[in-house]
Length: 190
Image 1 (cartoon, rainbow, N blue to C red):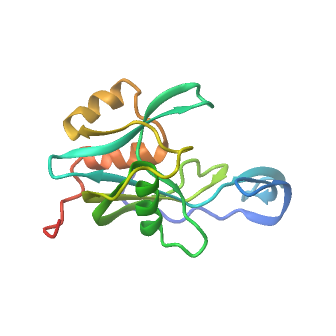
Image 2: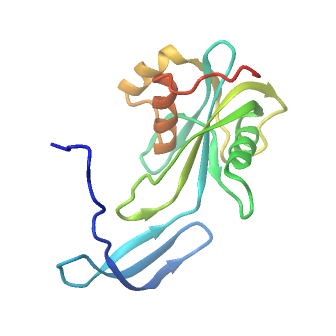
């Protein structure tokens, strides 16, 4: 049982990385590593971009979600707006831009929740999660590849969607669980 105190685990020695595949979207590398007390070996690392995701909550305690078909799992599910943070762009700005491009809505107030790595053992892809309070309709979605049916879903319906496996994506799950737990509080200025 954890006693509340823990030292740092010993770091691995890193001897270099060789690129196996490199594109605008993904880089696959082979990193020569040696964990403490073990032999050296090659460890594959997938490097993806920095991602920002936002859960926009309106005054009626509803979350704006998109219904998308994803060919990799071969199914449709509900997701939150989000996407790649562009070079030099702040993650909060990226989250707002993606929300506008994908839904036509923009949050009034943005609150940072967490930055996490969805598959920390093999994939490097920081994900910044935000909650946006209030929303303003600014137009129609401008990214047809990422747009899908948009719906305001009551927060009290999210547990059912979660239980039925109707929510997709690590960023969506982290943000939805955060909203469901009531960990974000609506700022008084929204």
